[in-house]
Length: 76
Image (cartoon, rainbow, N blue to C red; front, top):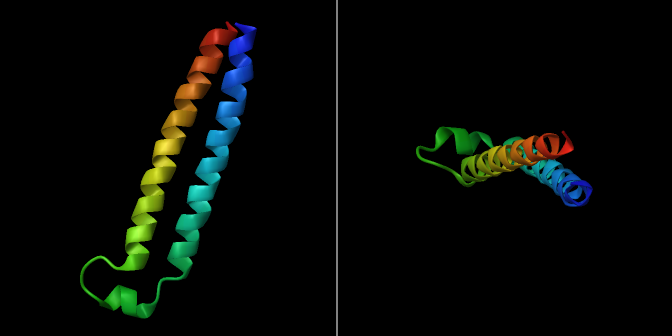
């Protein structure tokens, strides 16, 4: 039981770092968006990066919630 904590806690910290990284990269892509990106029809490079980072953030958050649930389950 205790050995599982030594695996899950670092995994949770790494996943939280990945969530933060994806969030910051998505915000940077948003800040780099130009007026031209807004006026052009279709998906621009900035929009594509924002969508990619949003999906990555949601994926890492889901994995972090699963790891947290496992951590709580094993701690009881």
